Amino acid sequence: RAVEENIRKHPYFGLAQQADLFFSLRGKGVKSGTSAREEAFISKFASWLPGVKQSERAYATFLNKFRHDIFYKTVAEWETAGVLAQKSKQDFEDLAKMINWGTGRGPMPNFGNRVTDILSAAFFAPRFVTSGPAFIFGGATKAAMNHNAGASKMWAKGIVGMVQSSMLWLHKINIMGGEVEMDPRSSDFGKGKFGSHRFDFFGGWLPIARYTAQVMTGER
Image (tube, rainbow, N blue to C red; front, top):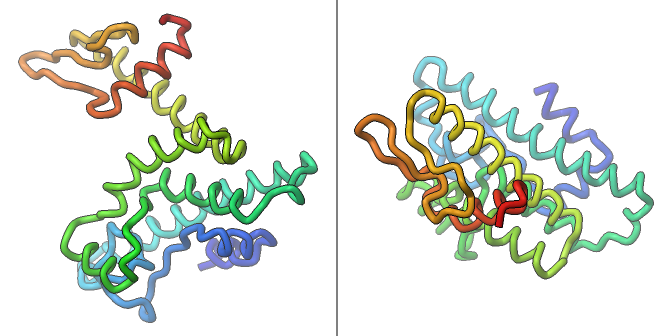
């Protein structure tokens, strides 16, 4: 509770709420199945099981702090740079969207909260499913159109970090005896074989992973 109280007391909390940065709710006053909860713990019935309630508290608190720390840090950087007054409502909303999408809170059709709650109950974590494509392609669109330099910078850092960590894991698989295509110029980049098992590390994200790796390594 102390961590969440500190989040709420921050001078930028009002900005975060206006920008629609997600703040997960939990406890007796929050209905089971509501979109105000984290999708991994959408039902309150599981909290009757030993350890689940504590897991939900740790999970929700971490994500609340993580999301708001990023938002607060970015806004503070804008203020230090003297550009905060130039930022529009859309700039803050774009920043919040990037953070939400990057932490598993993807967009949903605007059918109203009731329909969204039903979808969350019928399909496990629909917002998480949409968050990946939204972050990759939504961020790419904003970066390409230069809608918001701050949000675009965050998106670029996320993509580069993802490719860097992926290449590290691919290198480890190589060291452990696997066969992996490490050349980003190849259409088989990230694909390989470990024993009798074949894998495609990047799956549907291969085009953007290849392009990012080519820019990082200077191999085109």
